[in-house]
Image 1 (cartoon, rainbow, N blue to C red):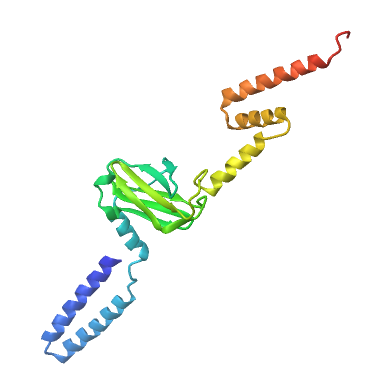
Image 2 (image 1 turned 180 degrees about the horizontal axis):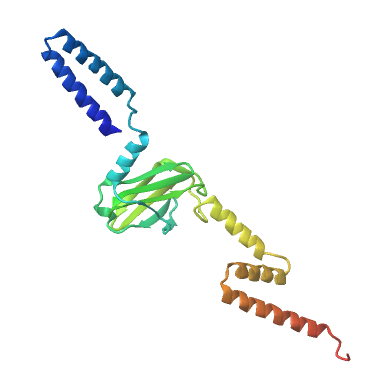
Length: 221
């Protein structure tokens, strides 16, 4: 599309040049008509799509995008600190490492590191953070994201989702009947285990039922 528009523009410039040199009225009128036709064609040419611009920007960043899943974290009274390991990140220009904060989230973008872009997003942080007080630091092979706590209180985990997941697990184990709690644990192990684990649990279950059955039969029968 861009090439066709450029060719039409070149034709128009040449026709304009010829118009300045034409001395015969008939030739002048023909060139004038051609000039008008070319101007309409150029006007009707579609402008470059935003997608093309985005693709150019993407190619200038280089490489493809990798989602970061591995990280470590700890906390102080004032900050929650997230550590992301990226080899050679300290060699990048500072503007290539960007973090955007909101009160309950942040997203990290590392551009053009060894031919790849890296992203990490945390939504629904456990507690509100101060956007103005939060920042990032670049260390050797590490990006440190520092989320400033709005209140100086301990975080049990990073996100609300993690908290809800832990509470569900705790509720499954904390039952009045110890055997029910054990059964819940076995069910979880069975659901998450491999084939070998499932066979082992099935075998233990069958043996347990057989023992219970034998124990229920009176000795004089």
